Image (tube, rainbow, N blue to C red):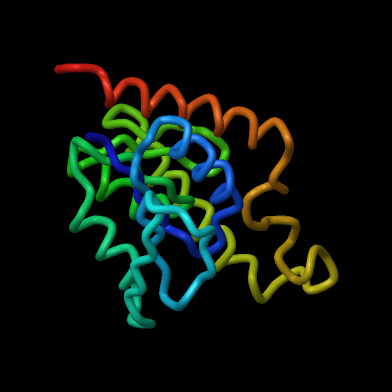
Length: 161
């Protein structure tokens, strides 16, 4: 039986996950550093892990496996979960796989280096970051792509092996 693990901090698609999970009868564990209000439903569980650095990531990585779908925007957590055999989706529906995770980690490292190098320079542009920022704004197309990818992932895991 598949299950869904959500890295809940800053996750813009929790409601979409719930809808897909309810339709397929798949349990969801929402992992957070502090209490979050969840809809009252027997398939939803909140796992509060405390405020330690990477506590939520560590819990998810320890519980992820071939029967799991992990929802996260954290590339390093995605890498850990892919290595554990889990299906991993970004908030925009992007699938992280053995073939794609290396490039995603490398891109993350390059962007972190760029942000660190630009942080103290070009103070007059884009909040002192010279136009280099975080992810683009979340769009309706991202939400739609996410729903489709999650539904496909659930159907794939529910198939007899």
